[in-house]
Image 1 (cartoon, rainbow, N blue to C red):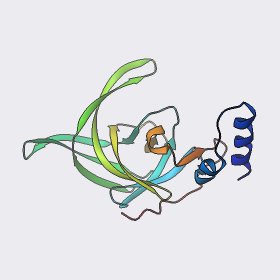
Image 2: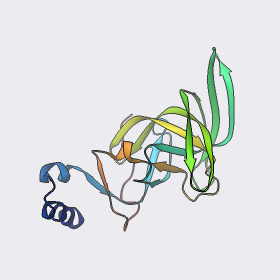
Image 3: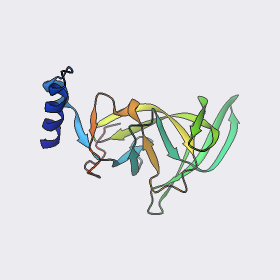
Image 4: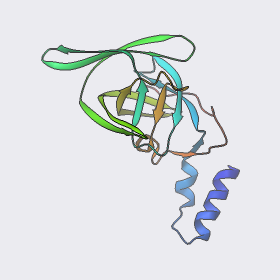
Length: 164
């Protein structure tokens, strides 16, 4: 609460609109938090990235196939402790992601239930091989907006508690 109050004072000092009731309703989270996906069946740590628009998860052994005339994808995600989870979803689109000092990358996009703390939403999620990264997911602004404030000094402040 101390950090939220400090933010409100700073915002108000610069003459910008601030709403005490609106800001108080947002939960402060850290830069790494556990999330659950796929109806709460699988939980892993995700990096909270306010510089990213959307969500992405680490997809291993990605296989695209056709089912009933629609493009689908199957992939495996691990939780960082070796537990694996197989997911199969229809591909809804593709996104081209620009990467710093690298070629842009075309990624499949699926719809997926995502839960952080008590906030649940069905979101567009792009699939990427994040095998070189420490965290299995990345949560961007679209999911955070209106629900969370991010404090870069803390981590693991929540547990997924959504009712799917």
